[in-house]
Length: 89
Image (cartoon, rainbow, N blue to C red; front, side, top):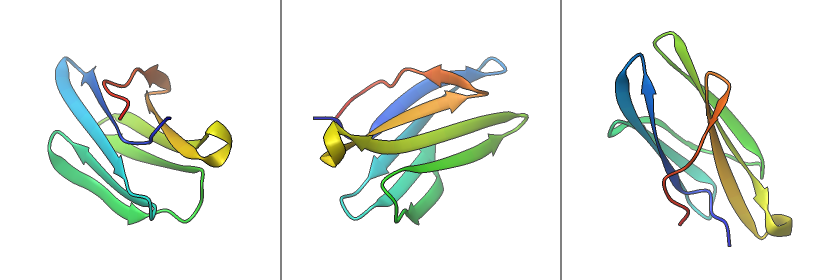
C-alpha cells in the first residue's frame, strides 16, 4: 500500500540536498530540507501541491490519492523534472 511519506536526494548547482516529507493520517505535512523544517501545515484536501523556492530553483511536492483513495502517494519535481524517491514506507 502506498504512503505519502518519502525522502529524496538531489543536487542543485553541485550541492547535494535531501528533502523529507511526513504526512499524518490527519493531513499534517512536515517537510524538511537538509534537516530544517521548511513547511509544517495541515492540508484539508486529498490532493495537495506545494512549491518551495530554493535559490534560483523550484521544488514542487505533490501528494495525491492512491489505491482508490485508500492511501496517498507523493512526488517531487525539481525544476519540473521528476525525482525518484529513496523510500516508500
